[in-house]
Length: 317
Image (cartoon, rainbow, N blue to C red; front, side, top):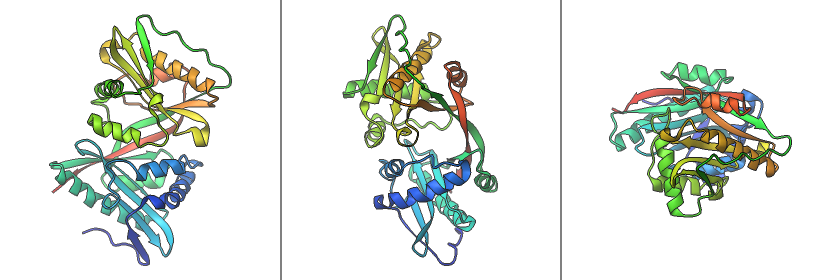
């Protein structure tokens, strides 16, 4: 049995036309937690248009009269063994109802994909005490911690020399290049916390639908004619902070130790500074099996925000 919707409240499924109202709700909750919206209307529109997100089953809007007072989602990728969830409301009773609904739908998704259990992940600002307490009281536990890293560009940044024997290929205008990037992306991130392998088709569709990304923002690094590394950026932080965002960066295990990841980062800094960006931002899992945090610190980036990912394992029966 799920929790009861608070008296005087109603719910319906979200639609793409709800992006502005949901953005205002989410931005207000973020401001309360960290002092800034940390979100844009484009981000919200992209979320509602994400390939694989079923608006009719995987999202909830709660209203008090005509006022939107709650928003919740559950979203799966690949085999759907790992599900990302989110929920926002200033009303604890609405939060409880949303979480109960999300758990029911998560079980359904797990069963639909043949799983006896699923893992649920939710990212929470370290300063959001109320949400952390909610999760701790509902069988979630801290899974890992991400630091948002940033470096500011106050003037021109010198472009680094391409490492000896390496070739940098900017942009991914054709399917062959994109498939090579997908293969390296999958190999470098498999086994890391929160990563779910996706087919090339699913990976392509997700990026192609993103309003803040185009294929010119994906670069590959080759050694001896083989793709061994990649860097993928987007404009997620351009509107609110005039910063480039490095969404993914990876180098195959056999090619590590040659400074390739550091080169890709420094090259991104030079490109960003030349484009007039105020800085470059990325997120790093501090429990990453590779020494990623040390890499980012070594090139002058600093941690500016802490986000904990809370996880719950949920039987689907």
